[in-house]
Amino acid sequence: MAQMAVVDGDGHIFENDADLFEFLEPPYQGNRIVLAFPFFPTLDGYHRGALTARRGLYVGDFSVTAKTWLDFMDEVNVESTVLYPSTGLSYGLIQDPVWAVAVAKAYNNWLSERFQKESDRLRGVALIPLQNVPEAVKELRRAVTELGMIGAVLPANGGDLGVRKPLGDPEFWPIFEEAERLDCALAVHGAPSQGIGLDLFNRFACSMALEHPFSLMIQMTSMVFEGVFERFPALRVGYLEAGTGWVPYMMDRLDRQHEVSGLEKGGHTEYSDWMKKTPSDYVKGGKLFFSCEGGEESLRYAVERLGNEGLIFASDFPHENDATRCKHEIDEMLERPDLSDETKQKILVDNTVRFYGR
Image 1: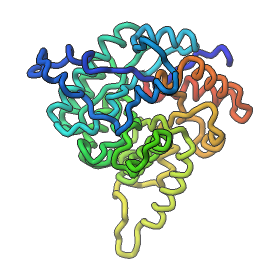
Image 2: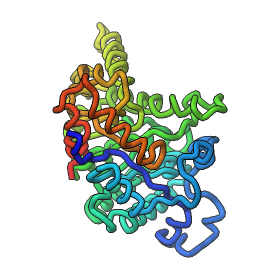
Image 3: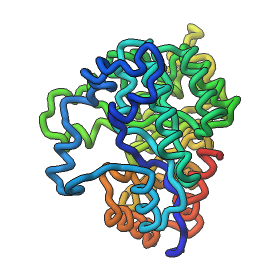
């Protein structure tokens, strides 16, 4: 297994406003006034570049291009990757629906041109403007059928700004219907910490430890209790960058609430009528996917509870991992005595292929 070429389920690029500017459509095309303000809202009050500089992870003239990724994959023995945004992870905070549509299209065109067309080892997920659901459906369809992308990223946290409803809300169901029809993946990816009780911290480690799992817990709870996975049984959804330790806990927590909030004498339930099974049945049903890390002590227990069908490896390059750290995490996974070779194969290759489906 040491010679296995890994399929990476979650990598990143660094998009900047100057990159996207040339891909904007009218009335923004060529109008440099738009560069006077950031295209995407800040994720929170932290400057991610300053934090990375302090860690000394990258020094000097650093940029992420298709070649950067191809060189990294060759060094680490990664066959292919799926590319997610960085600053664009805050797109759910955009207040202006018209701008949300424009910047999503520009980002998707730029990603297709600068990365996907350079190598079929680089596959992209689209930004779609949930601030305008009909336009989000159209952009998802365009991204998959015209740009060759393998799905879309959903905002884990709108911060009480742009996308003000949880993802299970029926307003977003046309997006799930279209994703099911296109047979493409949707991924909920954490990042912004605004509005979920973390704003009192001034140390990034505190926010970073909690912002991903808390936001994913919120969104998975909404989608399960609103009946999304019953209404759209073929829908594949990933919850990324929070590890797996939170998942068994939430299975128990949601099952408990499902039991105590069930049908009483008055004939009323505290969850959607679409729900026909217990929450844990949906979580471990093979349509929900969770990124995991090689050194997680709780991973074995997650496999016991979830099975080995819904766990995928994520490099997170170039955010927290460089090539050295990524190789270490892969080695940690391969060397684990508490996971079978079959499970390692599924985590490092097979499940990622099944999730993204293309």
